[in-house]
Length: 449
Image (cartoon, rainbow, N blue to C red):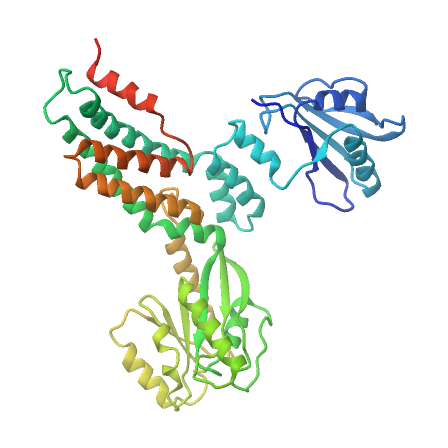
């Protein structure tokens, strides 16, 4: 471990509080602690100590934790100072730490040092940030599982298949004169095919982990004055969007976060979709289309009392699995409802009738959304992707493995593809060593006996 400059940071939120925690890490923090307290506190035990500044002033009476490395969060010598939470106390202690040679930590620097010192792999380091940002039970659970190594274990299982396949291919390439079974390269096919299948399944499921982390996106779409904003307000249970009788009131995308069954959902009220010469409204329609296109689900709101054909305005945005909301059902039915129902017949679009004015059908829609979000985001296995970075590396690895499966009769080329696949997977959670491959070769074939 390379010696590192001592760093410090306030680990609790700034402002007035009962307790403020200051963390230090790096070479020389033992000397800083001795200078503050007069001696080193017993390792890994909270001790009450008087903190004295370099000028002899009493700074505070604090609980002190001395955490010598490598058994600390960063793998370095660490200190935690549990201070009284007044701003003056905190500022005085931080100023004294700077005077003793420590410097303020950069964002994420404690976790970066933990990664560099082997205390966390990269996926676990990312999980620390996700856990801090977690707002829902599902986000908390996913981040904790990833921090505990669930993502790393999935990649380690793929790594084992990769090493097994490479062992056979490397044996065929590097030890042609040894007493090896015939067509040894073909023995790499079962692990390669299994790996390819598992990577394909992980990619097909790749959106789940990202959507748990970032939120399941639902777009409320439809023609102007269909009642989108009223429905949006009813679902988020507050007056988040302006509602008027004037068509085109909503000109931009209005987002609101809510929690359904422990999952974060981002609901968006969008501008009414229609052809318009108004530049501002046209930009709103463009943004509505873009948001709807990227959403996991679209609520297609139709004015069931209209008779002007406006139900068709957002028709091109609707996909299988979306929900058609026949709104304003408390009013006399218009021709648009019949036309829309005829178009919907036989299609995979769920239909729900609502009236936000009469508070009718909104609870049924809310229940449906809860079912949909649980169905989309829950799963037996821990997701192999929780960030776009993971998905890109997984797709890269799958491409190399799929190509290796097609050219296994060309051992050198197939082995190179598998090595590239291992490099891609290694960028997420670990690495593949040539020594690991040789270990399997020797164990499997007793080469060099």
